[in-house]
Image (cartoon, rainbow, N blue to C red; front, side, top):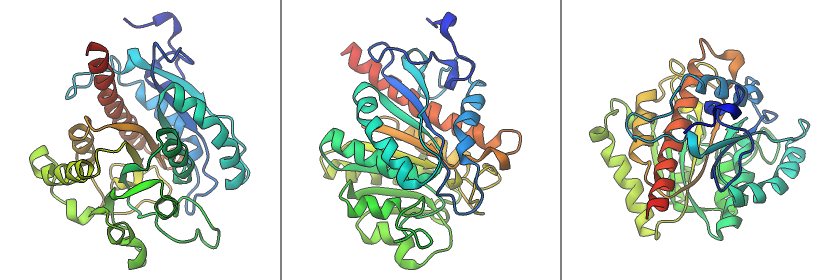
Amino acid sequence: MHDFAFLSDSSFLRVPRQAAPAERPLAIAGIAWDGSTTNRPGARFGPRAIRQASHMLCDGIHPVLDSNPTPLLTDLGDLLLPNTSLAGMRAALAPQLPALLAAHHMVWLGGDHSITLPILRALAAHHGQPLAVVHFDAHCDTWQDHFGEPSGHGTWVSEAIQEGLVHRSCFTQLGIRSAGDPAATRYVRDQGGLLYTARDLRGRESSAQLAEVVQAIRQRLDAQGRPPVYLSLDIDCLDPAFAPGTGTPEPAGMTSAQVMTLLEDLADLDFVGMDCVEVAPPYDHAEITASAAAGFIWTYLAGRARAVSARRAG
């Protein structure tokens, strides 16, 4: 039953704000930061746009997963962070994360991709072990510096691997296609991870066509004892036809159907969190990009709602 008296027109799926964790263990929070953007800024406005686009999902019931996350979901709003420097933002973000992770299963609305590294640090500490990662992106994000700076939205993957925050063999990249030095673009594969470029995935949209990808991810997780899994979805994994509103668009990308199929077919993994980043509304048209982001997040949450319901029933 919906809590109609407490619905919020400014929240994701219009769910209540700041609800009790016991009642609503799933939570949304925005990290409205784009100070590490290297091309077109505007991702700081992503959380607002994604929330607005989610209002189209009226009753919340997912047609494939047959699950509705809204009764289990709360929206915590955007975190209060300085908009000055990356170091300042991360210093303010880090102490807020442990309490949120202890209380809720968190989904983060970005913001640019530099937000993922502190989240991985906090999750690895929270779970006491490295994480598996499923990473959708046009860019490898494995550069060793950020245009002369030590860290940014293009370095978080190599930093996470070097810090031991992730299982190297359980790090999967999907949709990579941007220009880059081979040492960077092949870094995850060279470290023992999985890499499916956008070219590798061309023409593969159905469950049957993507079964090889899903099975490869599952086999690696099984081999490592099924570690907790984090999902990081950069909206520019999509071709600009499906996501024009992003800071670094790259042609020849994934389709929204490809991403949705993979999210649906991986929904039963032991996910412990998700972020969706790089939605930049100033470059969007007709909410195409924000709608895709809202749909992907909703699908992820529907999978988590099924898991919560199964635990409660068992």
